[in-house]
Image (cartoon, rainbow, N blue to C red; front, side, top):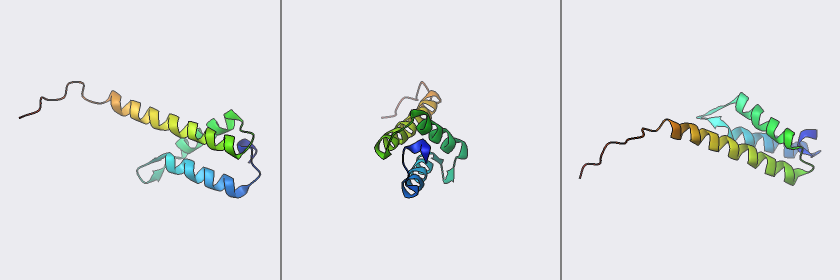
Length: 84
């Protein structure tokens, strides 16, 4: 709880659940991905729940951007011509 700047176990449980949902791959929660996002939140050193939520959003946004960057890197650079 110190890592989130909150002394509320309810807040922590929901924040972890939200991060787990943001970091799922398919139906499986990625333990490594969740731990990474929690470390991001911890590294930001939020002082209260609002800062913890913003830190969680930063972690989730980073995760999403990196996922889509990886996907874009694997897109065929020359799509076939469309048939008319």
